[in-house]
Length: 302
Ligand SMILES: N[C@@H](CC(=O)c1ccccc1NC=O)C(=O)O
Image (cartoon, rainbow, N blue to C red; front, side):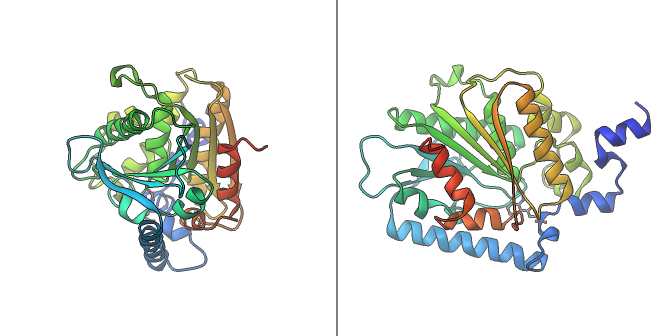
């Protein structure tokens, strides 16, 4: 392919190292605050939401779904937990090297108030875990939830940023060897990265040590082009913020297009006036547009 063709198909290939670093540093695109303050605020809101969730909701904390110390999850139950309920699982972001379930219970209050159980998933971030291990861990966390709540009214998987890559990989998971097919009814992929190759050229790769092969094996954008939907009725909503970087917006749009071409029931939303972090922070609010989209999807109110 000539240089022009390459740049058209993959505009990041013609970017300088500095520009690529910028495009893949979400906090630098926050307009309401400085980059460091934006990251601090995100963590604080997550910690506070988690504290409130644990104080006000019935919770089962640090439940192991596997043998590794990182393989635990938290379950937050609706108040008068009925026999059966939908389950919303959240896979946190942080470029596979930071973040934790213990500061990620943003959406617990509004969702449990409507009868939805919320599960926040921990996985072994780098340098302890490799990306292949993280994908395997998230797969097993979903199988664990299905086995624990076999009569669930649907599992809805949400991932943010790097967590959206992990969640998107679940569209391609092979459940046969786990002995259970989870009742996955919807995906919410928020401000994600679906083609990992550009990450190789950024400082984010220092603790990850991704090779080109690792990146390709874990890029749902590449893998999705080669597969058919396991369940064509499963909703996949690809969401990005107006103030996400152009590269993050391109990644979401192209992944959405690939999902459509592959026959998935996909939708795309660019949410106005929000950046990479505000989208998730706002899930603490019942009246936020994305909280409402999630509730409408779960309760099929269209
Ligand atoms: N150092 C990164 C941090 C970051 O990307 C991030 C932080 C918290 C949750 C998600 C994030 N992004 C992707 O996973 C930045 O520049 O914003």
